[in-house]
Length: 121
Picture 1 (spheres, rainbow, N blue to C red):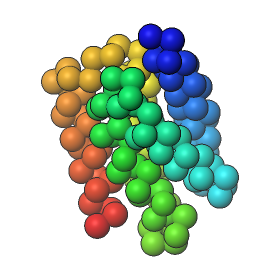
Picture 2: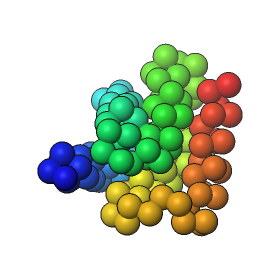
Picture 3: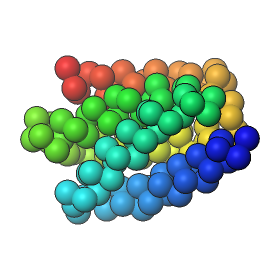
Picture 4: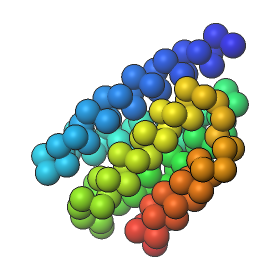
C-alpha cells in the first residue's frame, strides 16, 4: 500500500507540473517535451505494478507521440497540446478516483488513445 501511495503522490505532482508546462503551448521548450516523455514513460512502466493498468494504457501512446516530436517526425501543434492536456487531466482524475472504467472515462480514453496512435502511424 505504501508503494501505491508514493506512486500516486509522485505521479500527481509530475502531472501537475506537466499541466503547468502545457498552459503555454507556443513556448514548449525541449525540456518540457522531454518531461512529457519521462512522465508518461514512468506511468507506463510503474502504473501496472501498483494496480493502475489503465493509466499505462493511456500513457503509452502519448509517450510514443512525444518521442516522435523529439525526433522531429511530428510537429507540435495546438491539437496535440490540447489532446495532451485532456489526457493529463484524465490521468489526474483516474489517480484520484481509481475508477478507470466509468463509461464516460472509457470513451474519452479511446478517443485520446486513438488520436495519439493515429499521429504516430
